[in-house]
Image (cartoon, rainbow, N blue to C red):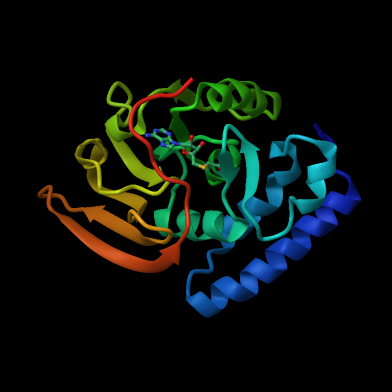
Amino acid sequence: MVREDNLKFQGARRRMIEKLRERLKGEGLLDERVMEAMMKVPRHYFFESAFDTGFAYENTAFNIGAGQTISHPHTVAVQSALLEVQKRHKVLEVGTGSGYQAAVLMELGAKLYSVERQKLLYDKTSKLLPAMGYRATLSYGDGYKGMPAYGPFDRCIVTAAAPYIPDALIDQLKPGGILVIPVGEGEVQDMLRIIKKDDGTTVTEEYGHFSFVPMLQKTAR
Ligand code: SAH
């Protein structure tokens, strides 16, 4: 595992951000705060072997073990922008995975709570994030249930493909809260942003197609 952020990695990261900026501008989803946060997080730290780090700043998803992937940088940028995180917001993430999306949200000032159903990934990320100086509350469990003991949350982000919108995630949102979730059972999902109004009803917006690993029921070893 590479834990050194030298000029070569910083240069590659800057080029990745420049490309993302152009693309996101065209899509109307450019948030400079998100770009700054992504510039601060060494994405190559989340890759298993030194060999793989060459791919860390390509716009690609990548295997992180247990059959799971770290999301594309573009996907992370879009979800982070849609979430509109403000400093000290309580943010619930479903699908901790490598911890990369979590790190970006913490750079945006989030108090982060994240749940992961794969024990292997939970264990690995529970060590990596503190080693990088990030303090998050991680939980090994089923994200369909959210993290009721820690709610309600200002924001919720789901980073696996959900077949439907879990009620628990809406319940655990504060009034005025936002849920960003890819919904669909096939190869591609619709990125939805759901805003919970003060009276508890919701408004749903759609932001195009993305491709995530499926959100599965119950925990796995
Ligand atoms: N946010 C992650 C993306 C990981 S991919 C990152 O930045 O790396 C999606 C993750 O969701 C996988 O780690 C997968 O194990 C997890 N997942 C799938 N179904 C889940 C569920 N029901 N509850 C919690 N996590 C789940």
